Image (cartoon, rainbow, N blue to C red; front, side, top):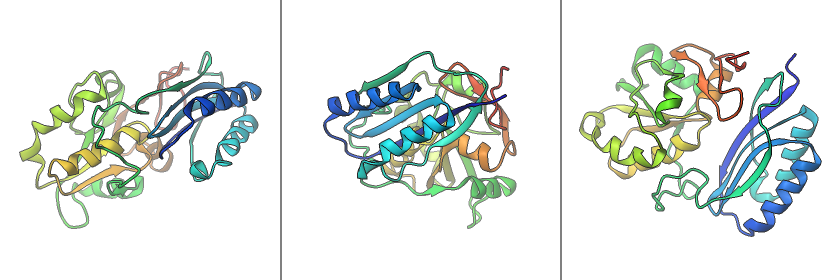
Length: 245
């Protein structure tokens, strides 16, 4: 029986007092018997947590007391066992490392496309204006191995910092297409979409909520395989169930 609630969420927002936040967030998580990882940086927060539904939701309410985090909307899935071994709160330079400090999603996001809209586009292979649509995987090679959108472009990278140089190789071939960047939960494809616009690609969107949101709203259509996740489940199916029960 799946009684453990797993959530993932991020927000790009300028945060200060990181060491104070680190101590406070860890103390509250331990109080509620949660496990997982919270990453904090000056550019925002990124977290993966699991526990009882009551305690996980209490923790989200705790975070939302901060006006900067009042609009958090975690993605949810369930498992029968706790998928994390410990509770960690880390302060990092970036909540997702790209090594491009000029990319600041808080200041200006790239346009997004919903899961339902992407489903519609992929059915015809074209966007609402008749332009060819391509999906662009921003994840690492071992993640892509578990599953991806059918026909997606991927670069066999081992870390996200390699993405900017790799995608430049396809700049000319992508110029006249509508590009939808995607990742597990939305954080990498958000930075990637901004970068793609910075290097001159005009028709770029990020998949809102990433693969996990697509599974939640659409399911398996246009997707092959599972989705790699960074916990002991290792991957989830298109029904958001642990792939290796």
